Image (spheres, rainbow, N blue to C red):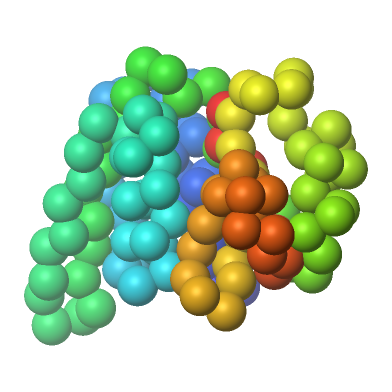
Length: 128
């Protein structure tokens, strides 16, 4: 598996598109849990449960009806805070609809938080 984050978002997107409410994500990591927490906080996931085992653990995710699409951004594009609007136009379908998740030196944040705090970072994923 080359990109774990792309695999996670693909599993969630495929589960949503075929009508499944739940999916299993394997393996688990802090980056994936942080991404799922942002998606849950913004209403794109109903809940997720991290289950630990001897092989790295897995995550059981319940998808919300609000989720239309979620994709990883490859390659990871480093951006400045002034460039966020440019990438919102590129990846999101409409202004104020959806979110872009960035990785910064202070953790994972959304595009709205990055604008408020004037922080740049690497683009990870978009969700709407």
